[in-house]
Length: 86
Image 1: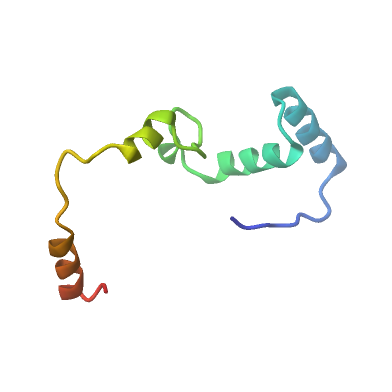
Image 2: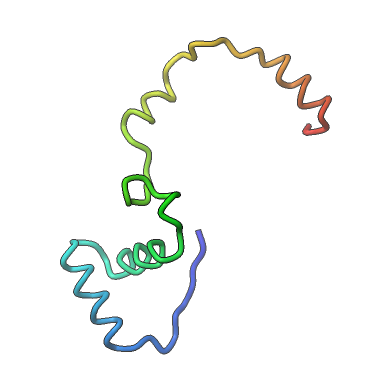
């Protein structure tokens, strides 16, 4: 994640961010991040109109499940060596 500083921000803009943040129960910083994300990231990359910052419970649990198909690590690493990836 990166950090930016915005200088000479209009007082009215800051007040609107403060009010929107308070209405949503989030920090002003989070409201600014969400507003910037909304205007810069295409809708096609959003899920149900929302940017997903965290994995769902199901996605996290799926990480611990045994794969349906066995993984041949030797074949995978051999392929990566052949392609010059390692």
